[in-house]
Length: 245
Image (cartoon, rainbow, N blue to C red):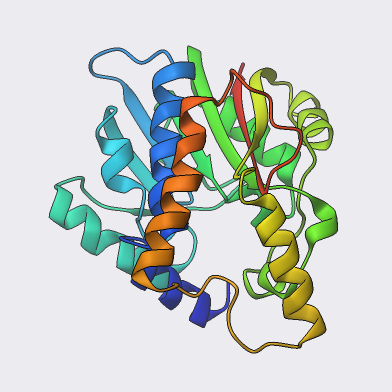
């Protein structure tokens, strides 16, 4: 990502509505779709600036790696505060690290869209799962919504559900569950992005809104966690998938 994108992410992860609500949804996905026992081993592949470390550490003994040095330094500060240990340098698909350690859950959260070899990366991570382990993936959805936001964040692609499942199957993995989320706000996002392009606005699409609006958007987005997997949303800004070997 651009340097400005990393700085923005680090500054906003604690309280921006999108990050807060997404963590709540990820937590629910883990509880409902990933069979973890006490003492589970967890890996975050591509931990960015560390916004998900505390959440994932609550589900097991956590390892994490990050490719970008600047982001890794920011994540390490959070890891130190949590007592997690060293955030390793790593890359997909061939630089996962941590020896031959196998994991009960690997989280790949809005990372796959950044790498050239998506099927190879999923295959490599699948090879590091225990026999009953799960790979939890989130990616941006709706390719037709491609915008300057994607370019700023150096995205390679956005996914449809069918397209992602085809990549997962190409990687030799089984799709246990998959669906869209951030769906309730989808119409608002479409209007916002169209207006942003038509008006040639210089305001970042992910800028933090006022506290009142921030709280409202967080509540709407987070409410989806109560129906994920029960009510299939036909479309959404993001896609989740739970994969197994």
